[in-house]
Amino acid sequence: MKAWFQLVFQTLKVFILFTGCTILFYYGIMWVNEEYQDYHRYDEPNGTAVKVSANVDTEKSTWFDRIVLFYLNGE
Image (cartoon, rainbow, N blue to C red; front, top):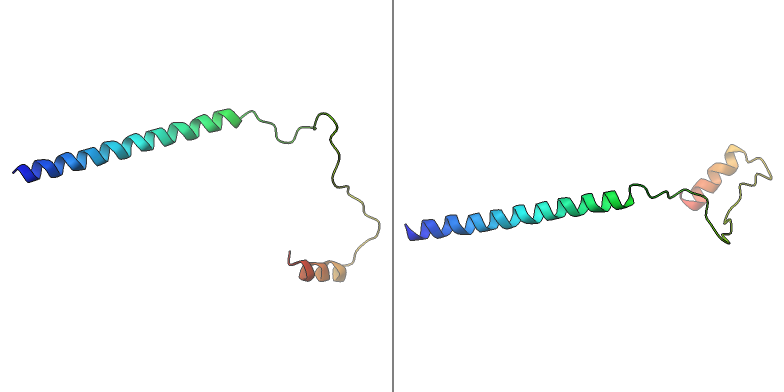
């Protein structure tokens, strides 16, 4: 009978530990979500930012050029 109570007590401890960690993880994820919810990633940069790329279309590529580029780059 004593072994049965120890088994129930150990199971209850594991259940409480699992539930507590789950609740802690849930509220941690909710905190991170609220922290970055109003973060605008695509705003214009401030300061001395330099544009990295430009859309330059100097020549019209044919479908053959595009498929060769596809197979060469593996895109």
